[in-house]
Length: 319
Image (tube, rainbow, N blue to C red; front, side):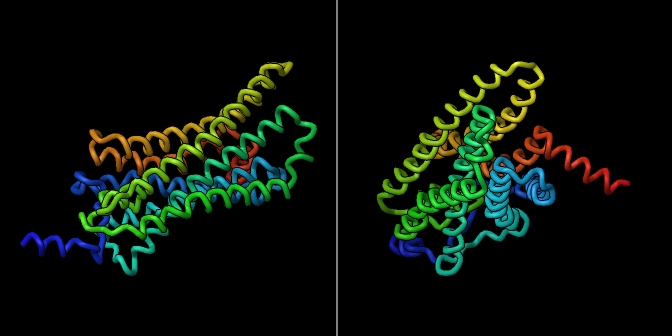
């Protein structure tokens, strides 16, 4: 009987996404805030893209980077939430290894690729604010459209190359422990933990990506904003300081809403052995849902040009 059971779970043909372990009975209720956040995130980011497209005065480096951020947020949330909701609503949990497992690996790749890309876009935004505030006379000549395009391409290539090993490493492991993925989407570590082999290389590579991205991007952002704050406090008038600080403040809020949950989720998922599994999965879901929700709200409220254009758009429709 033991041999039979071992054979049944060796290289299973089907994997099952468990959703949020321990909270299966509450999936329908949990889906309500998740679906609401997803709809708001989609509407908010599409609105940002639409306003930047129709408003000629917003055709500048900072707004191009904001559009890149909006597209990244749309991909991140859309790569996870629809499958998650189908699990919660219709109990659609099975992943066929030969057919859908490639889709699982694709989802995994997109999640990690666009997370790294989002970090790179924050670096680009910090660079834009640094040049605009610390060297405003050279802003238009330094960050031209071609330079912005090259920065965007570099961010895309870096994220694509760094996260490319994830699906290939996961694909090569033999799976014989269980066919149940204790997660609501194909998370890298959650899938790797099902393998019955020494998967240290996958775990270590995941940590290498996290610490290399954060270790490179965060110090650059911190140094940029230190210089920006020094320039802000040297401005002659209080109104100018408040106006400039308001724009940078919105950037800092978005940066914190992205890095803190990502860093916490990555560390807790690997080392938080005493943390309940449903808490780990909820943290991972919040990490992917909250930034796409907050970014358009923060930029829409705190960035005067976007706010004014949005108000004019609704006022015109109202009249």
